[in-house]
Amino acid sequence: MLKSITKSLLGAALVSAAFVSHALAETKINALFMAQAAYSEADVRAMTEAFTKANPDVSVNLEFVPYEGLHDKTVLAQGSGGGYDVVLFDVIWPAEYASNNVLVDVSGKITDDMKSGVLPGAWTTVQYDGKYYGMPWILDTKYLFYNKEILEKAGIANPPKTWEELNAQAKIIQDKGLLKTPIAWSWSQAEAAICDYTTLVSAYKGDFLKDGKPDFQNGGGLDALKYMVASYTSGLTNPNSKEFLEEDVRKVFQNGDAAFALNWTYMYNMANNPADSKVAGKVGVVAAPGVEGKSEVSAVNGSMGLGVTTASKHPDEAWKYVTFMTSQATQNAYAKLSLPIWASSYDDPAVTQGQEELVAAAKLGLAAMYARPTTPKYQELSTALQQAIQESLLGQSTPEDALKSAADNSGL
Image 1 (tube, rainbow, N blue to C red):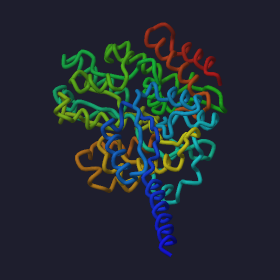
Image 2 (image 1 turned 135 degrees about the vertical axis):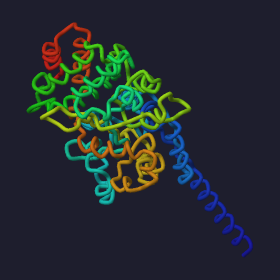
Image 3 (image 1 turned 30 degrees about the vertical axis):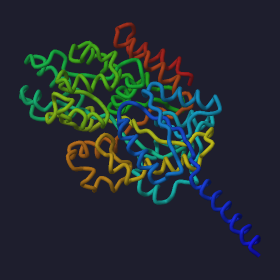
Image 4 (image 1 turned 180 degrees about the vertical axis):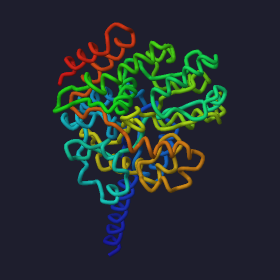
């Protein structure tokens, strides 16, 4: 009898030990993020720490790369058969990623509450061909930032409502000797330039594609590049803009060396931080201007999503992490560098307090977001357009010839 009880207790102990061991078994997932714009690295680490505290059986290894490395890192890791479980992806990549089986189709995991709670425009970030390939995470567009003090010194009462008015105000500022080159743009030969170009294409009511073929070489697409070249050659634009990325623009603006700058949401609170900015308290922000007779405002869809890769060995834990990072509670707690994807968040004082001006601009800008082309060949198209913009700015080609060449080399 004693032997039987002892055996029974031993069995129970082994089962218990196995259970404890299983409960404490840690699943490790790898996540790839961007090291610039939107949420800071510190924010992402703090969010992740909150996730692992709530899910002690899961640990997350974080990797941060510049935006320019995000796409290739994702694709190369996928090809190696390992790598990342969760990846941050740009709105321009779902077509390519879906076509090449990079991301898991999570359509069946998107709940009705998610569908109704997230702003409609945000969903376009993660959709392709009627399917969902993740959750929107960074809801973003480019805004026009301006230095209130410089405009006041120039006798300008209100920021510009049209792109032509922007030039006129910049000329006043220049003529009064307040700044040599009042405007800063992100026109390096990179995706940053395409985002500025797209903002202008939206203002001029252009089309990137028609019936699947390039159309940016005509109409509003051509007008947008002509505007860029005119702004550059006029001497109103900082000549280094042709080499600037968004972080360069932020630093120039924060140093007080630009009256106007086009940039993402994150710059608002960073430029208003007195510890790191000479223009803190002087930062104004509005939706990017429009074109008289064509548009009231302009905006590019610069949103990004979080998705689970098809190479993930832990897709359930990866999806749990994605839903935590994109949850309303998490986003509301970190709304200073990136505004939430959730509609009701904009009624929450914790989100809006201290950034009312930004939220007012966002209501206009986010509603007008214009998408870059949705095509599996986006990378080729973007590369061709980047080259066309550089050649035009440098005077190596006319906007007409540069865009015609880009259309011919776009792969479409």
